[in-house]
Amino acid sequence: MPLIKKSDKICDVLVVDLRSHSDDRGRFSEIFRKEWFPSLDWSMVQSNRSDSSAGVLRGLHYHHKQVDYWYVIKGTIRAGLVDLRKSSPTYLSSQTFELNDKSDLGLLIPTGVAHGFYAVTKATLFYIVDHYYDGKDEFGVLWNDSKLGINWGTRDPLLSLRDQNNPRLADIPLEALPG
Image (cartoon, rainbow, N blue to C red; front, side, top):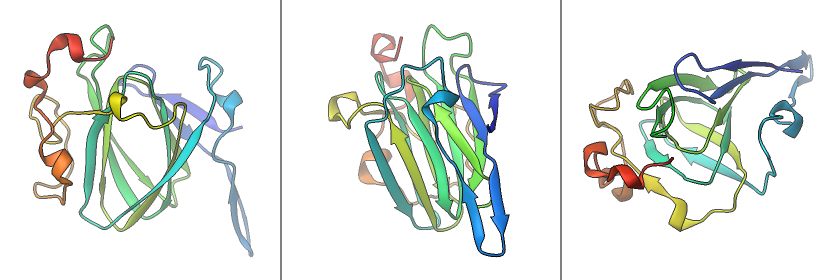
């Protein structure tokens, strides 16, 4: 059983310190079990792989319905999270996590927490979600909005056109943010 730690900055974010088993043949890690998250009505319905070149920043994205669970298969990323749940006691709190292929850490990102990552090196992120992709539940906020307080460790990342055009938090109506 892994050691599951709560974030000290954002409610409901969990860091999963996985247990790996190594020998001269290589390494084995169990990276996900539904039973590790008993408070969630978790039904994994989709898994995804995201490959990024070094210097790419993806995000920030958030959902009203979807939970994400991330695991880095290759390389190093800096994950940035911001609590956008207006009813949360940690509303607008932010946190970064270094995840890489040697750390054996999983990251559970609850609904309403904006998330993104900066590829410090060429990286492959594997993630599972509890809802099928729905473009109507895909929202964004500008990655470098100073109100969010995320230190990405870069000022000039490679961004998609969509992420370049995400709005600042001040331009998102409060009623459009997650509950």
